[in-house]
Length: 157
Image 1: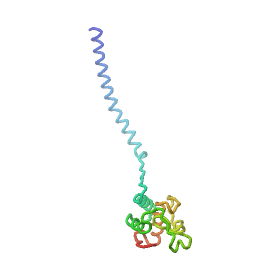
Image 2: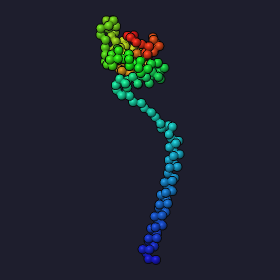
Image 3: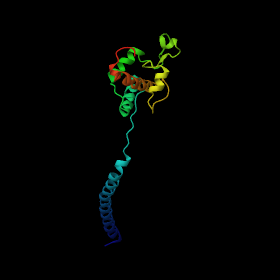
Image 4: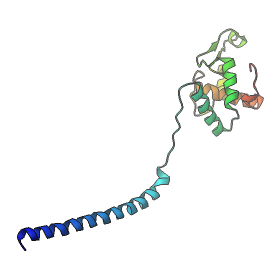
């Protein structure tokens, strides 16, 4: 055989070994990766819920917090009361009723006065009666204490 013939034969053998070696390596990698991935999966799984910055998102976020705190209420009950109290305006303030005359106007989506907000504020929400989620959650906490649920409120409360 000539040098070229030997080189050709050697190159073919080298290619076969390289292909076989690559195939074996590919077979081994998934086994190693699968073992490692399955062991790490439970610790690596996390879930973060994001809510839109609108009335629907504020109600849904409040409902999730309420569920964690054992505060009853439904989307429909909250929405119905918000529409009656503030028409969905988180910056609404009532400067004309008896509370306002006493110096404590009703504020926010569910028109909560400051002393009621302070007494029924739910930890984990902002301490601001104009914060939509804090306002909804505190008002629902108050309604649950006084009426059993925001769902039982069909007029000013």
